[in-house]
Length: 132
Image 1 (spheres, rainbow, N blue to C red):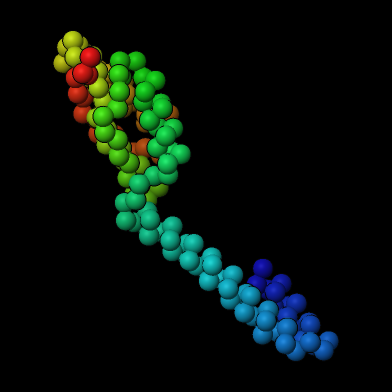
Image 2: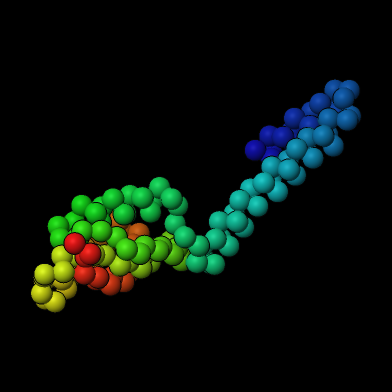
């Protein structure tokens, strides 16, 4: 793109519009600055453990709520580090379930999340008894 802009600016300057060369240079400079800003912003967000997008979080939460045995989500946090996602989660299960059953539900949710969302690298799940 910058080569085309330079070519147009030089071409117009040669045919009698000398102001077009510096104008084309400024436009090219602004385009390069915009791309540099976008790349820097993306890199910083990945290095600083930012949360995932609202859409991604909504998709993950809806998927969790559909899992058998999950009665609710009490806490939900995501962190993006590089191209991987870490999820911290508290779910509610029926308070009459045994510890083994509650653990199996958490293990199933963990496994299903990592299968459904390949970008999720790790899920930390805490199980709470439901209020029902």
